[in-house]
Image 1 (cartoon, rainbow, N blue to C red):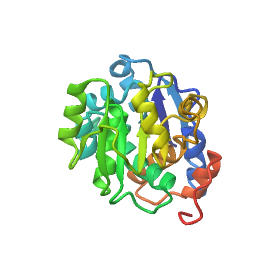
Image 2 (image 1 turned 90 degrees about the vertical axis):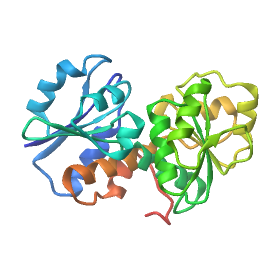
Image 3 (image 1 turned 180 degrees about the vertical axis):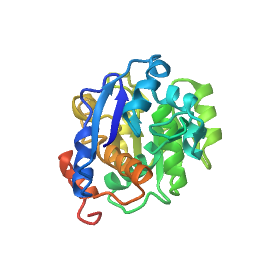
Image 4 (image 1 turned 135 degrees about the vertical axis):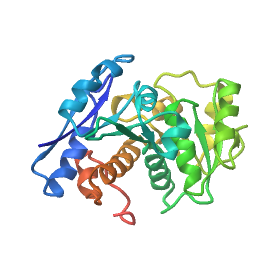
Length: 262
């Protein structure tokens, strides 16, 4: 039996089990399962023996991505630069390999919201400087997007700009899209809110009840489902070395990609 899971806190709301279950069914992997395991902040080191004994790998969500990266024996370039891992694989020799597929998911979500196949050449504002923002900025830049960064801490903005090729701080100049990793309920300065209302497309990395940015701005905002599916598909490729059925994954999340993408 090949068992996988998503870990974090909270995690009961996660759509990852449904998305991955659909991909496993579509691939004919009847011996594989995917579930959710709640692990609070700071508890991951103590839970590693349980995870290794029961799972071949896992996805990692808030607030454990930085903890996960620190525990890995090997990290891919994106996880190493972001200092955060959202995909783990447990080696038979006890080692842990980590990747960050959130950047891939962010690039998919931005392209979807902008109605294009690729983000190459687009100017994208990334809001926030935490693990999700770092991964998003790196992933969008890796796909040819031009990144502008906004955050409350000037030092953190400077650090993210420095690690992201071609990035600059965002001074609210026009962009093709804005990608927000801000937590629900974050106070929005008036000039930031005005810039977001003027942006052609806005994506909230949150999904479900946590995706409240659109209501606060009074405008249409894409939620994080496209990102969730994109990063999940990348994780599936890492674990199994095959292409997942993205249409089945999207249907499990009740998300319809543009026809051009399907």
